[in-house]
Image (cartoon, rainbow, N blue to C red; front, side):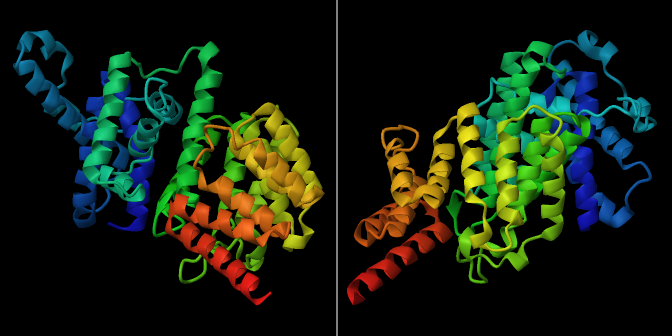
Length: 417
């Protein structure tokens, strides 16, 4: 199957699922049927060609799978209980792309809300979103997260069971719940992107399949919610961050910190698009945390050299960000900005406020930032200890190698001084 065909299937997957769920109202059963239809397409289209109406073809095949399963279930009860509601194969064979949903019906948003239902755990929300809305197979998702396929299958199954147990419907949440549910959707997309941009474990720093999928889904979300400032902010943040990916590693996979990256390798088109997005949304929408993070990313990306970075402006944005969305990671990043503006001691003082935060206990990033600021302050011995502690605590091999290398370099300098 060609790359274009794979992209088409991933684009059509949520549309087909939405059409079936809208008609049958059984998310878990419909989702299984859609996955079978996608597999059938992957096997048949390379030999027979893409049908004239690929969406209609997928809906037809998925509906046949679904009605076969519903018939099997009904036969174990009483045929007359469900016979009136089940369509036969002859009827299904003739319908096209628009028989189950209007031509202009876009179910992406409803699917995202359903997959990010509050009854689900964060892990299940991510997995279900990638499968149902992203069109990825269970094997692909498992590979992206470096877990066995059986483990990911259980995670997805639990998510579908939770949706069923909660009685969730394929409808938009009531108006008084939409803002909170949208925040959940954005958070799930943010988690997917972050795991792809800096993998929490494994031999590679990046998992481009996840970053690409997060950007694609966020683009889809912005298409259906063009006036939501935080949706535009998240898309801008992803583009501006992902633009640096080509310069983040050396050919051997070694991590390159932001200040040392070859900025000529950054993706100019993504930076231009991201800057335009955040500039537009900041001028017309209420300010939110994703917009502020995108604005910070834009300042980094627009600096031609690391020394040109406007750190006072970044610190001001982090001050505002921590006021409207306080969390320890934001404070950690703010400590770096403070060190760049007011000196490493000021940054280290701010880090001390995180030592008692249960969410940061044992987190390698706290030790890594402390090591960096201690190195800036000239305390090489303490910096070495913190670098080594951070290296022990991370499960990412590129990060581990980078942190160990920093410690080794300082140790060698200490021996020669």
